[in-house]
Image (cartoon, rainbow, N blue to C red; front, side):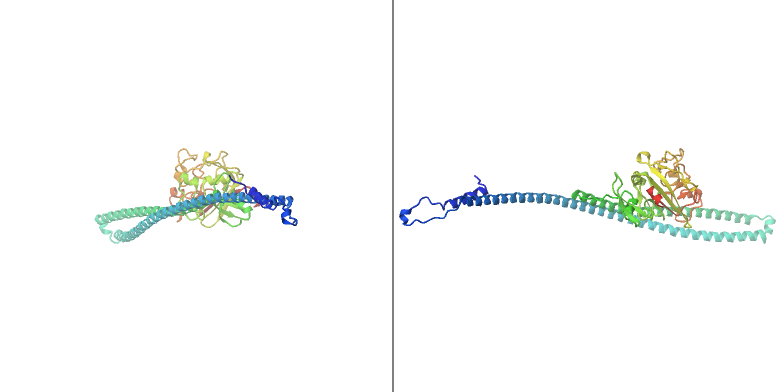
Length: 460
């Protein structure tokens, strides 16, 4: 049977105290009566009560210590689980990194092969140009001979001897045909080189996109892991657009992370101006990114935020759906003249094919290159034809994805011409253009599209 500590202490004190009480007096044997000092009951009770309180305090301290040990054990288990998750995440990131390195190596090998093919094509083109020059020189000599025959030696022709003239004429026709064949071959080689250059840029863009996605995924995993392992007492909500960052004190243009309502965090490029912050949704400047993409790419976004890119229809919708927003379109020509216009707009969601509705028609002819139909114009790509041309796919005909009402007003996602525009109209109409500024067949040098809350116009 277990005896409580406090009761055991009390019994010990009483026993030791009780031993001091005499059982009997022996006055006759001692001779002289001797007085004995006894402890009072009150003192004994006080001592016992103190010992009981001490035991109770010790018991409470032991219980408290047990609770603390139990809390420490639980925290250690949580810490061990977190360490295990970190280990698994690290291993997964290492595997992804190795896979990306292998893919990058294969892409680099492909790029080297493409460069070698391009070098061979350039050499063949040079040889063809040399042959063309030689043929041109021969043709000049033949023309001189013909002129001599027709002027100084035309007597034989007059007397009926046409054999030499016929031979020369036949040789000229043969040379012209050969020259035409060479020119056609040069055109074909040039087209192949253009395709190879586009493929090289596409491969480089894919490598850059994969690296950015890997970095963004790593950041999202870290944020998710931190959120699951540690709950902050006073979290600071992410901004929903660049103007909100500007109101919080951010004044430098660059990359920031946004999280609109009911959306996952994602990175954007913010253009900070004295009036406020603009969220950039599109940029064209050097032709380094191929914008002739399919619907899924335009929905998710592609390119590099520090260079050419399309932010993504779903991200644009998530930023602009919360209120009244302004779309700013800015472009420049090859004389570096800049023009910009603003539209109040509304972008619907995926269920409406991200139809764009311009809410107000602005004065002047420049703004008419985007449709102001009240129902809105859906977005179209070459694999998802949503334009208003029943007999034609504008995205396939012109290149790139856009809000095509018809095929001729504007297309800022068309083909970018690094070199001077081609002479053929059917090729020029595939370029980046804004019909009411520089015309239908003028390829623009740069374009930028960005959005901000409507209140920013009141400050400008």
